[in-house]
Image (tube, rainbow, N blue to C red; front, side, top):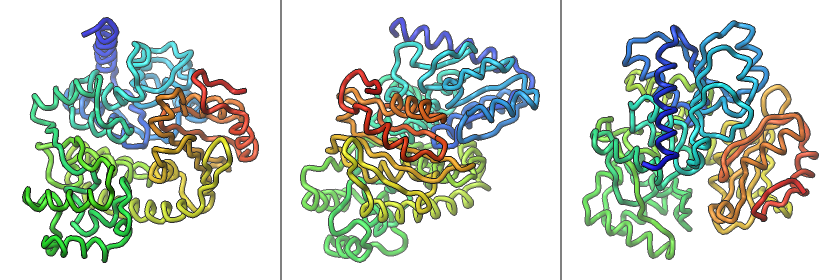
Length: 436
């Protein structure tokens, strides 16, 4: 353990002690997969200790939210996956912040890897930070990291994986990296794949079924990829390698032996389930699933089906409507794509070879514009930070924004033209990114 990590864990211990000293705190967490899983880790830790708490999930910690907490007299608040980005938290009384986003001007107790030289955008998510504080639910920490696009896991995330392996909560597998190995029937497993996109098969169930038939693999009875024997798996991988040569088809994935073999068994599938709950205004269902409440599974699956439908429709729209505006690719989803999925869809249509980011917009609440951006790993390695860009753009236009280098978002007043002009003035390609 190096000096930075030692200081980080000291702060974790301090936060745990103070959090458990609260009488009846309000746990406030974000609504995406990392926010729901990290919120569930904190709630689970309090439940394990028999301590009382209240919990709520929010989309953004803006001034309106801070005003609400001040007006209601909230004296003890634990912010999870947010809090470090709004210095008005200093106006609240007793606060603990568990976050991994950019932070500035916050004087309250904050556990944030960025304050200790640890990259919160790639090495650990909010769920991972929550695990380091309370040392419970390593599987949820991995779900949060995967949901925040930090896979394959390294750094502090890798340490969490090793801890989960020791406790029997996590098993690392090397297999096809397609989504749905454990939860999708075989035909849909390939026909719904778009990462990577399979020419002639993605979005074509008939072609997917034909491929399995040609390989002599039976698909009846809701058979899943995880049900195939080793020889059948090898034949599928070989056939796909011929269709998409040069693509990395096999990779590392994380499964959870102590959870049922449903959508919560594998990290990618679990994180998508939580995203479906959070982004369709039912984050509490996701938290209940995290806490192994079996009564929540079916409603979560229903939300997942809706989520998949919206993603398919959104991706089909995006493929025909992404515009090249020069400094960025632009997807105008206003009135067509809901704000809860615009960022996910940008990530799905993003091509790693693109030399500029993709920015998507949709209609937000209270006559605002929701902005989401995604960037390739190459751009990030060259110095791009979408989080910095979103923070500066939102500040310029009277909104709130931030995030990570590879994925970030903002909420601004209805000033789309001003935002696009800001994009035009911004240099997305140089190392030290400032507005020109």
